[in-house]
Image (cartoon, rainbow, N blue to C red; front, side):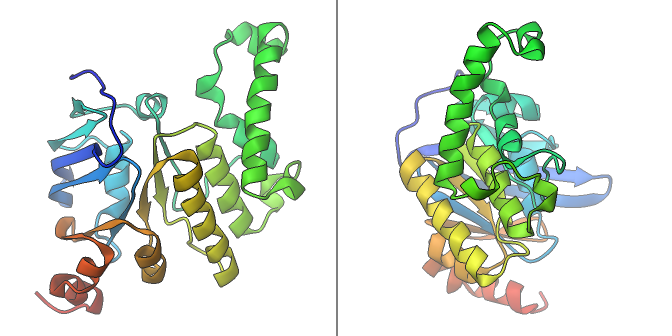
Length: 264
């Protein structure tokens, strides 16, 4: 593996090169290549079953492709464990909210700080000595995220009691608590009403501007994709059919055919 490098804004933070993924005889992804530049919002779109979530799972190490390579911060790999990806600055949210429903908003976001904690397990269990000092620092960071996402009023509420839109915002907060360089968002607007979508769009743009986070976004709402994204890659049946700016992709005949269900 090549050592990780410093990546300047506008350069490729992550490269997907000729990646193929199969489950038995089912081809989820076939020979897909694209990159994600540091500081951009990169959308991955396509009809249902196009391989979008599978691609995110490859990027964060949950799936291991049979062919192809992922290059992240200059380090090339064929396989990576999800916890290694997380430790190297890749965080994600999920299509279906994955929170600890009995825990409060604050405690769920604190989970995102786990990889940043340096004190021993002994001190963390008893919340004493260096662990107590460390928790104060991490809680301060979490409170800043809570303020940023405007969820102060639910900081002590168990997330299982929250409406779906707010649960999505808490999940975003947990991902931000990891201080990611690359944030993978899997349908962050799913199940939201118009007002909730507008709020989430604003927060995603603010994450990019204020935190300098690079974002890869899966989203079915094409209005959201066209408004938020710097570049868009389009998948259909696991293959890449288009790649470019939102305007270029919107005018691409192959993309129009895919979304209109035109037979090939």
